[in-house]
Image 1 (cartoon, helix red, strand yellow):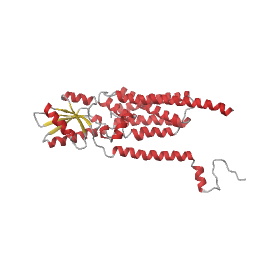
Image 2 (spheres, rainbow, N blue to C red; image 1 turned 45 degrees about the vertical axis):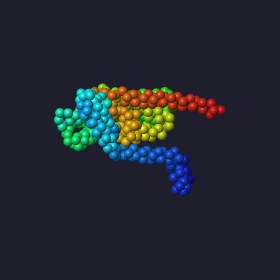
Image 3 (cartoon, rainbow, N blue to C red; image 1 turned 90 degrees about the vertical axis):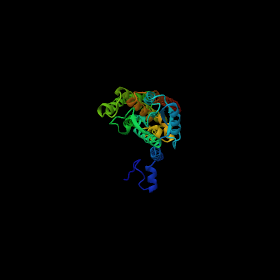
Amino acid sequence: MAHTSGGTGNRNGSFLDEVKDAVTPRATLLVLGVLALQLLFIASYVGALHDPRAKDVPFGVVAPEDAAGRTVARLERLPGTPLDPRTVADEAGARKKIMDREIDGALVVDPRGTRDTLLVASGGGTALATTLERLVTEVERAERRTVETVDVAPASARDFDGLSSFYLVVGWCVGGYLCASILAVSTGARPANPRRAAIRLIVMALVAIVGGLGGAVIIGPVLGALPGSVVDLWGLGALVTFAVGAATLALQGLFGVVGIGLAILLVVIAGNPSAGGAFPLPMLPPFWKAIGPALPPGAGTWAARSVAYFRSNDLTLPLLVLWAWAVAGTAITMLAAVLRRRRQGAELPTRAG
C-alpha cells in the first residue's frame, strides 16, 4: 500500500512543483538577502580600500613666522589637498598634539639650515605615516631641502603595519554578533518574554567580559603584538563585544532572523572597511571616512590604538559611541520583548473567542 508522508514532496509532480515545494517563499527571500549582502560586501571593501589616498590629513607646521605662512600655503596647494596644514608654536607642542591625536604629523623647519624634521606616528597607522613621509620628502626636494623622519609614537616591532589593533577589535566584534546569533538560533530569534531577553543580555555580558580579557591577554602578554595596559584593553574589549552583541540582539528582537543579516551589514560590511584598520581614516573615501567613527569597529580600533600607542588619549568620543550602541541595544532588546509579550497577551482572548 503506497504511503506518502507530509514534507516529502509530490513524487508524481513536475520538476517545477518540486522546486516550489523545496524552496519556500521565505527561503527565497533569505537567499536573495544573502546575495545582496554578498554584493554589498564586495562593493564596500573594494570601494573603501582599492585606491587609498590621503585627504585633508591634520598636519602641523613649526617654523619662524614668515617661513610658517609660506610653508602652510605650499602644503595647501598640493594636488588633491592631501594635507590640512596649520601652524604650531614649537616642536614640543607638535609632539603633544600628535600624542593627543589632534594631528597626524608635523614638519619642523630649521631656519638655520636645509635639513628639516618630519614627525609622524606609525602607531596610528603605518600606511599613513609612510604616505606623509613620501609627500613631505617630495615637497622638500622641490625646495632643495632634506627631511629626517622621527616616529613619535612608533608601532610595535611585532605589530606589522599597525594592524593588530584592528584585528583585535574585529575578533571582539565577531564574538559579539556570533554569540547573539547563536542565542537566537538555539531558542528563537525573538525572545519569548522580557525575562528571556534579560537572560540573553546577561549571557552576552558574561561572554563579553571573558572575551575581552582573552583578547587583551593574547594580543599583549602572549604574542607581544600590542603594548598598553591589559586592564584597559580588557575593558575596551568587553565594551566592544557587548555593544555589538546587544545591537545584534536588538535587531533580532525587531526583525527576527533577518536581524542577523542587518547586524552583519552594519558591523562587517559597513564597519570593518571604514574602521581605519588597513588604511587610517584620512586615507579612506568620504563615505567610509564619515561612517567609520560612528560604528563599533571604527570606534574600537581608534580606542585600541589610543590605549596602545597614545597614552590612552582621545578616548572620550569612541567610548561614548560604544556605550551608545550598548545602551541602545539593551534598551531596544528589552522593549521589543515587552511589546511582543503584550501583543501575544492581546491575541489570546481573540483566539479564545
